[in-house]
Length: 213
Image (cartoon, rainbow, N blue to C red; front, side, top):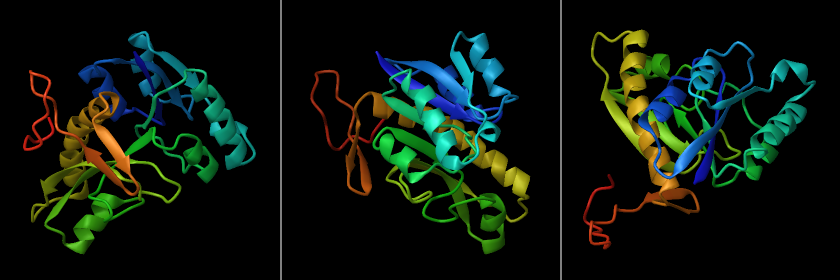
C-alpha cells in the first residue's frame, strides 16, 4: 500500500476530490496545511485522515518553514506528495528532496499563464480555450513535466468567476485520475516529459493504441 500526503492552504477542494474518488493501492496518510484555520483539515479529520498544521508564520524565513514542512511530511514516508491549493512557493531544496514524487495542479494550460490570476489573464488575452494542468513540480515555477491537461471553452460573455468554475470542475476530474495513474506506475518521467502508459488489457498485455484510461 502506497502512501500519499496532501498539502492544502484552505478548503482543499482538489484534496476532497481525490479523497472522494479513492486511489486503489494507496492510502491518504496525512493532510497538512500551512494555515491553522484551513477548512480542508476538518474534512480530512472527519474521514480519519491524519491532519497537521505547519504554520508558515511561525518561521523566520522560507527555508526554515520548508525544512519543518519536510520533516512533517517525511514522518509519513510518502510515495507521492500532492499540492492541492497549497499557496506557498517552495524552495528549490524542498522541491529537489521530493523530485519525481511531488505534483501540483495549475489552473491554466501550461506553459500559458503560469503564476497567479490565470483566469483574468486568459480573458484579457482573448484566448478561445483555457483549462487545467497536472504537472510534476520542479524548482522552476509551473514548468515541470505535464501529466495531463483538460481544456474548456472560453465563452464570449464569460466572467472571471464563471471561467474559474468551469476550470475547477475539470480539475476535480483530472487530478484524481493523474494520482491514480502515478500510483499505478503508469507515468514515466523522461527528462522534461511525462509519458502516460496505456492501461493493460484484461489478458495482461498492453495495447499501445489504447488511450490511457
